[in-house]
Length: 93
Image (tube, rainbow, N blue to C red; front, side, top):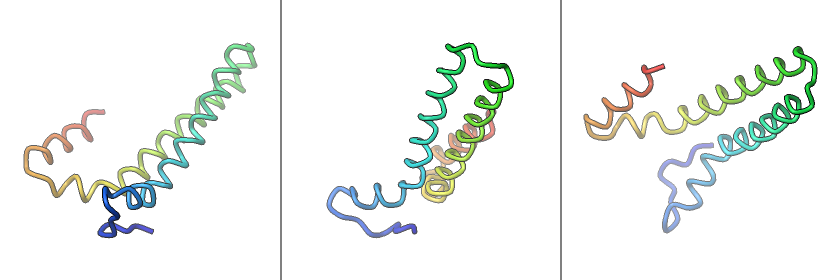
């Protein structure tokens, strides 16, 4: 759920609520990065390490997509210079 206009003083509840899927993805990503690092240190097979790299890549893409879905409309509705910066950042890579 997305509660864009439901704020508590300071907006704390709103921020925690609507970003929860993004935060959860970031936590899973942290675990995957740890496993990847451990696999490299333990000199696991190339296949296992590459699989972990691909999992991390997918997790980053998923977290980025979830974040963009939550904030893109808000970011795009800012002043024109900020909107242009956003467009530049999104098209840079």
